[in-house]
Length: 142
Image 1 (cartoon, rainbow, N blue to C red):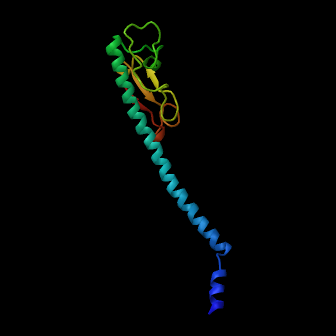
Image 2 (cartoon, helix red, strand yellow; image 1 turned 135 degrees about the horizontal axis):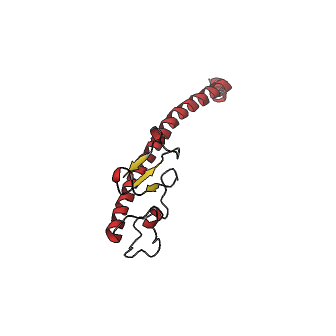
Image 3 (cartoon, helix red, strand yellow; image 1 turned 45 degrees about the horizontal axis):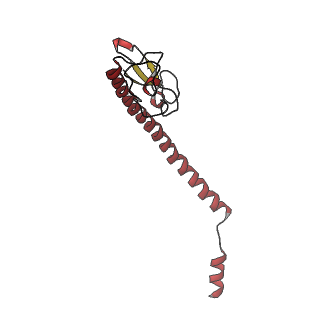
């Protein structure tokens, strides 16, 4: 009986068994990791939409106090620091030191905006280029 206990204690995994377990873990990690990566890009797009909404509110507050939206030349930086001799500037109107989207690209600010809107704020998405689908799609508010 004592010999059987020793043999059972000495028995380990074979190299093939270890490789099979490693391969299974790798396949599971790739499958689950791919799903989480897709969710991360979706979360970044949601964060960009929220942040653009906050920028629009800051632009409206700027207009309320100054009487106009920032010019194209002043850009969104006018929400953070006084662009010069702007009377009634009581900022900062936006609480971040820099105004970048979740992909670390600058938000685009155009004034006047399309279709007679006072401005347009947009993120170019994950690829940083005009247009695109899915996570590369532009996020626009005017």
